[in-house]
Length: 253
Image 1 (spheres, rainbow, N blue to C red):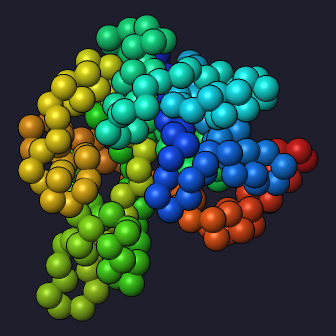
Image 2 (spheres, rainbow, N blue to C red):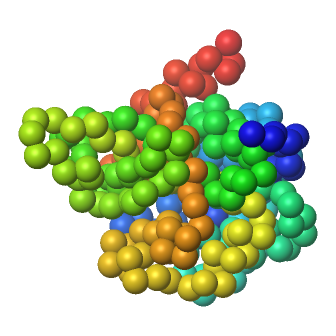
């Protein structure tokens, strides 16, 4: 299998203001900083990323980012998904067609930089088009419909993503992998993904990655042992604060 040098990698953090469960979430304060700043600082520690930029649709987030010297671009308000916002930002940054664009969730302030390294590593192989991460989970976690599951082939090619526990274990406990919502795309594939529009399975499961599988665009799944936690509701702030404190202490020490 022929390998090449890793192409330039651009990290883009979509951060919109509106959220049904937590309006203004990117600005939520955690240990004295807005959440988007934690995400940016964690992502910027990944040595493989050429550049990390925040992409927002709101002047409040834009102004707060500028005040804190976080690189930021303003995008349209009418995007249907974070991936559409990432593409607009990538175009504004004039990301080369052969580069890799990393969609970094703006609500993961405890992100491990090593996860981004794992995510982009496969792009030394020219056949890799899209990557994402998965971590082994137990059967109890697998039953939670908010926890997306993934099944994949021996060589890491994603077969399906679902909110249902997959695979179904007819006898005893099965082996389950929880999907971690970080993605890396070659720029030309990101353009293709957005141009395709929502697919049947994507609409059914409310999982946009299924658009790729339905259109025969392979997703390479990288197994990770790293763990992060997303902020969906205001009460999650306390949880990520406890998780972040030791990480910040280690970086200061």
